[in-house]
Length: 545
Image 1: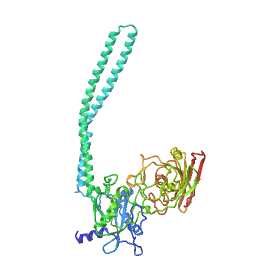
Image 2: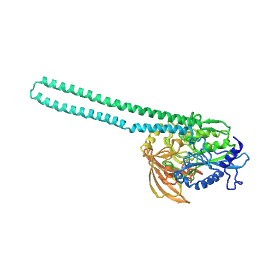
Image 3: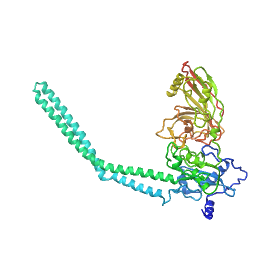
Image 4: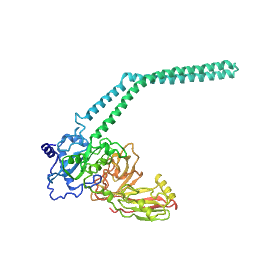
């Protein structure tokens, strides 16, 4: 690329800090984008981007619905520090805005193959709609419906007449009438019914053939539409060729080929993080730190808070960023660095144990390698039979868990959880104050597949019900007691943070809230029936927050 256009383009996109940053040290390692605390320079860059966004009244309505933005702190070839900005998806119906870096691939250009392909598919959609709404198609469908109705009604009428005739013959037969003519009459009626069925069935078949001919034509267009859409999408993904710090390029089809989904999800490559890194690599800028923040209202079903920082999405971005970060010195995944202490044994007998799990410890073995309660329990009780884990707590949640030492105890305890005879209470510390001091939250939840392990509120999700009661207010925060009546993943965290719930995230929640420090959620009370002794057992534990 010629030097002069390079400098001009770079000057537009590379922003210098308005604040004095001379006293702010650069990080030694680049941000691990899937779990991080924003570097002070990223916070300053984000504040400048937010001030710029506030000047754009033409985006007000769109941003009311919410959008993810990102900042990338970089060093240029002269060693000076600045930052780049990006948004996810498009903004104002276009990808081109002078303040923000361009997309990895701009599919919204009027002359782009993707726009031409979309126009062809739109034309095919119109043809399908015209065929579905045509008078000929409606007439053929009505004719088929009428033929089916007549077949149903005439056969039922004929059968009813035959039943009446049979009843009269039975009376005549009982009166001593010669049975031979009665038998012939019955045979003629049955033969007549068969002829009627054949005639009506033939009429239905003819109407069905006319309708099927039209339906097959429409279905062929639908298949063509699906084929064209899939091919166009894959062609688009092949145009998204992303770089890493070594200068190696791969397209999205290559990057997602080894993932469970095999093909990239819709919108892959259009998030802020890939745009930022791609622009930095293309223009000789050294990435220093990165962060993404949400601006505007929370999208339907999701928990996104205005102005808060969020990790990169897993479904769309992890395969892409895993490649793009190669060649950079990146922070280790902080979740792999967790070394939680051993649980405290609260109660133990020959059948079971009740423990106090520390925050940061997994309940069961995971891919991260972080120590789990299951591993620890098998070390403590090597003679235990069957699965020892009866129920789970999130890795970040601390508190009481019951452990089974044999299969029979495990099965009996698990049955109590299934039938909801176990009572669990959680103590939490919320950011802010809920409007009500007690109540019931019922918000169904399901997995947000593109942002695992995030959960989202959805009408087709699984029922999730929580009772709550405020205990006290402490320095702008609220200590609260939760009683979950169901046991969904992240149930309490979503119910606390969602605007439809309490609108107050749990302190330290790095998924639905601001993060920073440990998650202030503790399983503080556990009640169940002892499987062997029959006694109702109650255990309590005080949180350390």
